[in-house]
Image 1 (cartoon, rainbow, N blue to C red):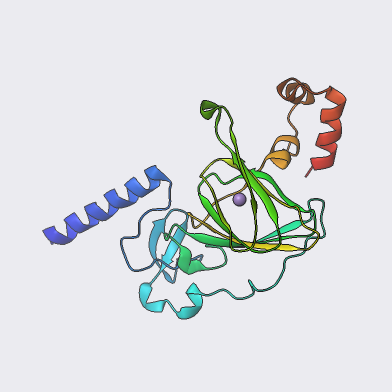
Image 2 (image 1 turned 90 degrees about the horizontal axis):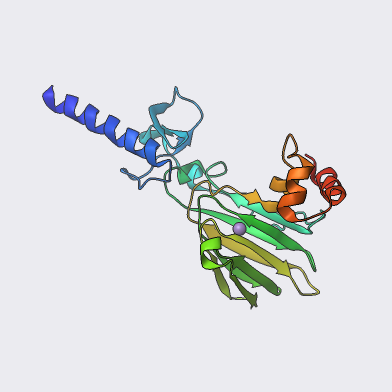
Length: 224
Ligand code: MN
């Protein structure tokens, strides 16, 4: 009886610690397949997702199909990101890893953005990309940039603003691993100029040293 009580206390402590970190934890078990259904879960709440009873886990929980297909790049930035994270593969829950496929039409780009919870490692499969990230203010906002050819790999450190541009006349395809089951994306232009409700244009005009009418145009463009 005393043993089980200490086990319960240790479990509660471990959960409290994982909440406090609010970060993909190192799993304490083989896997923790995510479920939205508390009834079939073990009622263990880990970083946003319940765990399924491990005995009910099956191969499909760790499986995704379709990453061989190009995404639709018919949009303003001429690129598409297909995300394979814990929402697509419930078995990724607590594993601290996920994957994306990025398609770029000729001269398309994956615009400046940041992942609040992940470092990204990208490998170019087809085409030619100009890629880069900018370090923080403390490091004088240095640009680290490179032209990539098929087989080339580039790393975007966690939290740094980064981008990729297809500088070739043909489509480009890249895959990237991210060090979170749910990396998150903050696209700079959409976040700053497309917030809901909009940020006061006077504020952004001063912040970006722009005419207020330019800010109003940008806010109209990115309105969501
Ligand atoms: Mn990225």
